[in-house]
Image 1 (cartoon, rainbow, N blue to C red):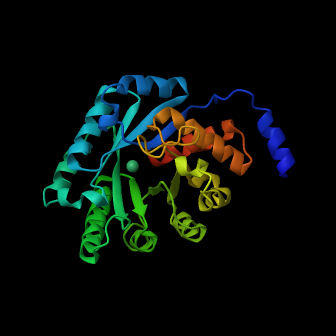
Image 2: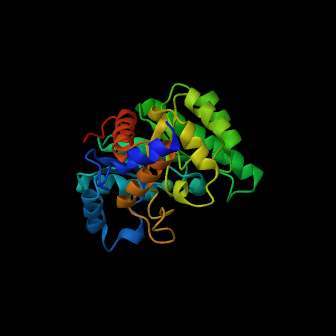
Length: 278
Ligand code: NI
C-alpha cells in the first residue's frame, strides 16, 4: 500500500476508540505510584477500551502483590518472577514460593525475568543473573506457563539463552529494544515482542523499523506503567489507558487501522496468555 493510501485508510477511522478491546500486556499496578487511585486507573483503562491488564512482579513481595490484586479486580491478571535487578531476592526457596502462587488461575505467566546489563556492570553478577534466569525458565516449563522476558542491553546473551534453554517455551521479549536482526531470530523461535511507549518517542529510530517488519502474530502492546509513558503523556506517570496511544502509533507505522491493531494484538495476547479471556 502506498503512503497516500495509508493516510486515507486511517482517515476513514474517525473514532479514537476501537470496538475490539485492547489488552495492556505488561504493567505494574502494584507500584506505590498507584496506591491512591488504583481503582480509578483501572476504570479509566476500561473507558478507553482496555479491558484486560497483566501486572508483573519483580520481587517475591511484588509477585505476591500482583497475584493478590488479580484476585480483587476481575480485569487484572498476574505474572510472577524475580527481575534481573532483584537477584538478591532469589534463594533456594523462591521457586517453591512462586510455584505456590502460580496455583491461582489468574497467574498467567512467569515474569518479568531476564537480564539487565544496563545497570549491572559486574561480570560475576551478570553470570548470577543468567543462572537465575535459566532456573526460572525451568520453573515456567514445570508449570506450563509462558514467560515475559526483560532484556536491557543484554541482547546477545538473552537470545543465546532463549535459543539454548527455551526452545520449547512460549513467551515475549517485553519492551523490545534490540535490532531487527535479533527480532528475526526471536520470531524464528516463535517468541513475540512487546511494544510500548518508546515507539512513540521521536528518537526511537530502531523500534519503528522492527515493528514495520514484524509478522502480525508476533506483536503485543503494553505500557510498562508507571514507567515509559507514550507521547503525548511522555514524562508523566504512565497508566494502562495509554496503551491505546501505542496502538495508534503501531497502526500509523504499519499502515493499518486501529481496529486491526486491536484485533490482532488482543488475539496474540489471548493466545500467549491463554487464560486471559475477554
Ligand atoms: Ni516492567
